[in-house]
Image (cartoon, rainbow, N blue to C red):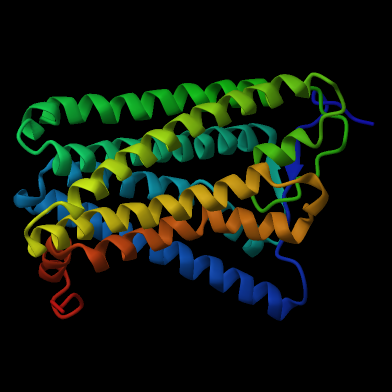
Length: 310
């Protein structure tokens, strides 16, 4: 039996199967990563380049694209590099860093999605004081609060997890250092501290979820009372992409972390990890660019012929 003081590295889950299957996994991961890189970079460039998109909604969308880039970059490149080098090794410090940055970016994204729900609520339900409630300074403060809160959240989880004694080996059954897989290596009841911290985090996440639901109930009530069909269409066009991104993010994350232990398996855990850590950053730019006419117009100037008005 080993403990955490003697562990200097961890072994990640490799691309399993035959050489052809490993190549297929590698190509799928690479294609998804490049799609996320291209899509989010285009959104960042379009919003930064076009001054008419310098509004609160697009400011938060720019932050979301930055977080999506960071989230997928914190996990996939290491997995691809290990596959090319035919190794599974990640250092102890590298694993701790990966856990911290992944949790930080994931939490910041959730907090930001909550703020974006508030932005849509104020824009549709309280349009007159919108400029006051969501001025440039207020938006910057809210975004900074999301990033800072997420950093503190990730620091607490990472410090608590890697302070636990580990005596179940160093084999992490995931393609990146996932906090749940690290906890499985602990043989001490001290891991209950982290379980309690996860429970508190779940309560906080549930509070944000309730806030989002209440916001959208008010939004849809206001939209259904709009006399103008064009106004309804514009409101739905800005809200539906956010709801789609939010649903994808929450549903996959909740099931991955709160699924019953008796249905857990290596293959299921891998699929769920891909769904909540790899798929959303690649799909989010597509969701926003397809539904948002202003963003499509800005992107069409960057890539003529690729985003035509429908």
